[in-house]
Image (cartoon, rainbow over all chains, first blue to last red; front, side, top):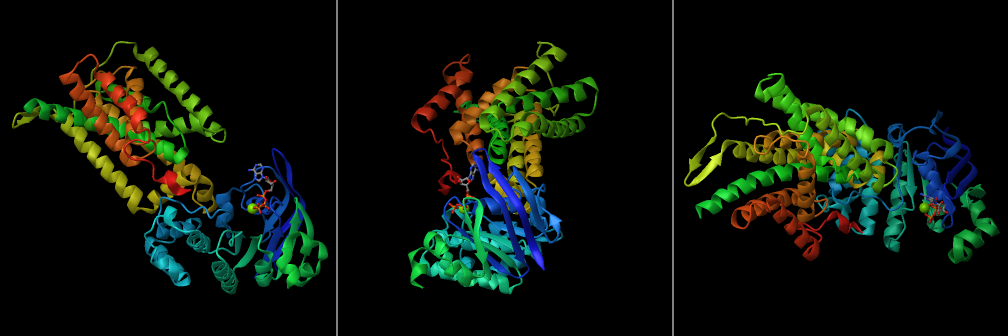
Length: 243
Length: 291
Ligand SMILES: Nc1ncnc2c1ncn2[C@@H]1O[C@H](COP(=O)(O)OP(=O)(O)OP(=O)(O)O)[C@@H](O)[C@H]1O
Ligand SMILES: [Mg+2]
């Protein structure tokens, strides 16, 4: 079943069109990778889905319902969680508080329920447990990323938007993050994954799209993208060529 | 020595007023990025609301007090809708100008309605106070200190111990992220405006029996709150409280030991000294270190 259907999506900032008529689909249970170089418009696409971009046209349907025109608060209540670029952990709140706030989109969960769910997240990310009472601004990059993902999962989303979760992390931690992405899907969450690290992203993804300055260059299963010479050269880098 | 203790008591009382207004001021900076130059007008309007209800309509003191504060909370939301909301995406400067405009408008509206002659409001207690040792404890000052302490405690409990408090803090730290989590940012901002105006109104009603109620009360208190904030550390909540207390004490001691007519000047001299020697204030902002 199609969970997300994007049609003829155009987005503009003052400077001009950043997305130029995109068509993208994500089926329930998939991990879909969204690749592209700096400034291609990947983050903008996620921001459009979450309702953060004002100047958009086209259509974004989530589980059959139109998202364009809705506020971010209402979109996350429908089950779309966004772990944005830069992690955006609240610097003056503790790890536990940051994670707990991830459930703000759901009604009817009491304090005790929240506490139990945060503990479940600590079971999922054991490294975070000892940082429970540390303030956000004290965390390292890898720790911030885990808190950000945990906070996203607290929304109990049907669709999780992940923007460059591996950015700035040490290789070992990058591997861990991608294992977590696979685990998340195993929990029944559909994932739309933006990445610069194409190798890693395609190793966990079912399908991928490659964006170039706001337009779709190619799409398909990872093997197709690997084998596309243009893509390899432009986006997958030397490493991919060696694989 | 007894004079010094007496002055300290008075300074703390006045400082507690500054601290309350300053607290409202800092909460708006944090929650909405609004540097509100009409903060003192909240106190001025609170005092006039009390004047109308208590002196004008004869509502019992305590009830009139509670109603005045409720009126100010509602007024805070209206203020948000008019002076802040339409300009919220335009950056800080247009909002600052709008609050300056609002402050002039409010002071002049009250001037038109009430005229320039200062009004008086009685204190809450008939008993003027009592002696402890050689210090005279004025009942109104005691009330101010008690209410200020209660407010600080209440605010601490709400901000640190409740989910609402966490959502308010999240909103003040990163509005866009808060909205992505499903926190109703507009509601959080409205709550902050309501609270900020209410606490300003409380300070106004409490200080009215000590100062005269006049249309100039607002700008005087605004300046003091602003100074208290710089002294405490711009945008810092503990800084707002300590800055307010320090300002009140410095003014009172300066007036008594050096010169009464220059009372207000001591506060501003202190402000200048801080701007020159320690511009980050008593509490350099921790949040600013987020990198
Ligand atoms: N708020 C904004 N206002 C104006 N232009 C913007 C804004 N945000 C992004 N842009 C521009 O839109 C284009 C796409 O940016 P976007 O952040 O979506 O790219 P990206 O693919 O996520 O890049 P990166 O890999 O660097 O994160 C860029 O040219 C960028 O400069
Ligand atoms: Mg990006």
